[in-house]
Length: 181
Image 1 (cartoon, rainbow, N blue to C red):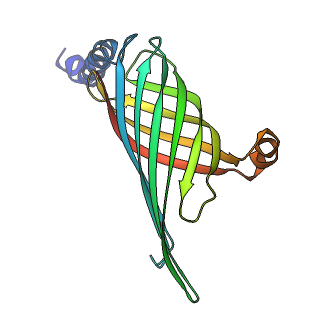
Image 2 (image 1 turned 120 degrees about the vertical axis):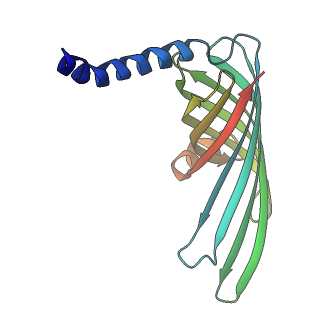
């Protein structure tokens, strides 16, 4: 009997943890009409740390349904570029509207979406920007989450250039934290 209890203990602990996690996940996330604010960061550097860039992005949105978020995103980026005879700092920013669809109702919520807006600043031509995105939000508390997002962005001046520039896009990655209220 004692051996049965000892061998069952890990199973009981795992089952209790899963039940508690499942119960906690039921009460997480937004509802229709809730707002959301998130702050994310990104950065990169070459191996010698003489060419570096970093950025910050803030999102503010509204849940149109329990799964659909629409909002506005502001990003600011800084790059320190050095090379032969070149040493310069560049600032740029982008402002874009976005819409994301979230899957599931548990603590982990993958999402897909799109954005459309403008990019401006040093070292970039002021122009339109559009992109597709995907990511994952993980709720640590009922209204607080961490998130990772990857965006494929392309620049355009007109409808014709959007079609041509889609193949010349760039990936942008962010990692951040947010809250629903």
